Image (cartoon, rainbow, N blue to C red; front, side, top):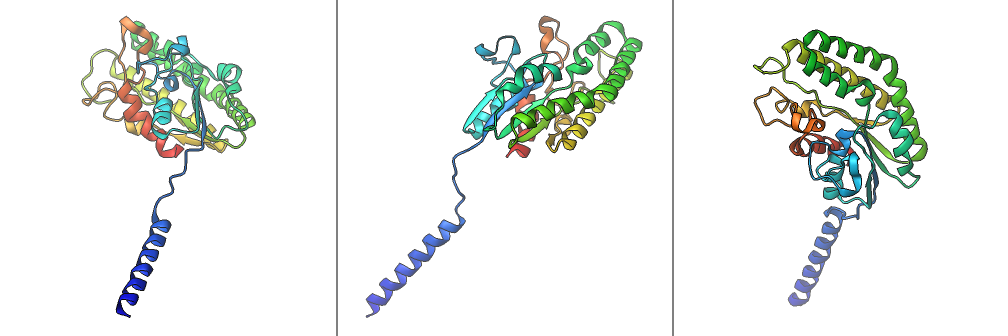
Length: 267
């Protein structure tokens, strides 16, 4: 009799334990997202090295935040059409066709080239403080006047082509840590450049939120890793030997700055 009762008790405990494990164990569902990455050089990964042969002058890097997400999360499908030099217009004309009704996740970083990031930095390096401040101010005026509508056109295009997708708009880092001893540009120029970047990022955030998209702000993540900071630099300084990577994130900037911020909001 006692053996029978022990056997019954053991069976009951085993059944209860199995039921508990079934209820508490995390589901190991296969990743279902169909992910498409759009945008400019900060999305393609210029400056991060390890560029794919197929990307040519677009310079898509396996170290860029979209590629890192694809490697670590392993969505059902992944395609990056991000391209160095992309503007809002070129995203609309050449990248949105990568989206479809089956796309479930989209990332996009764009807007900097519309206000002339590269030309501003060239002016600041070559012509000094007065011209630098004037160039940034002209870009700020353009950003206030034109950028909201340009971004709205991109976001409307994304929503039209991928109506069910989660869309993450990813911003830019601020280039300089202020208040440190730093060679090169004047403190006035560095502060004005930061001001211009912050304006572009804030306009982008407002446009993204108005479209119902999620905004991923990387600025705080780069603090301590900016140019003129004392920590490991996550941005390339001016590089005359390879001018195109100047002021772009390094591989560490993509993996330590961009990727964790994007991953935290993309899921």
